Image 1 (cartoon, helix red, strand yellow):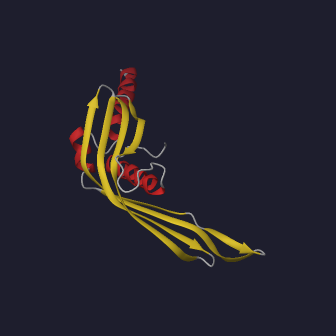
Image 2: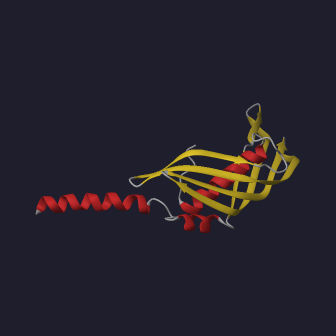
Image 3: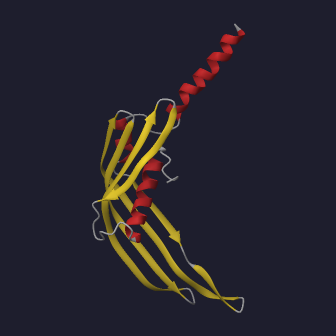
Length: 169
């Protein structure tokens, strides 16, 4: 009887892990948690400027993107789960020069479609198979900072909405 109890405990814990690993447990719940959700990311890429070892100011850029998700869709096929949604929002880049004053600002309206494909299985946490953004608005270059930060904000949005770990890409 002792051996039977030892076998039951690992099985129960093992089967519960995939369900508790995510905040969303159904296709409808994923869509509900994403639709209308907003997220923001920012980065400070300024660095100190020194002359003769003394800080005289800073130079570089700060970046910020805010996105809001609409029209989220989730398609499940086999072991894959594809999540996609349209996003819109704002992007801002501020340029700083010595003595650490803002010298230029770039503001853009950002739009696009975020797509995430996950490989799922009953016994493991989801694995990211593909992540991309497409159908860009104002700037069509996917490597432009506005689109890179839009992708980061969309990634953060889906991470916070459902607990998918997309940050390891």
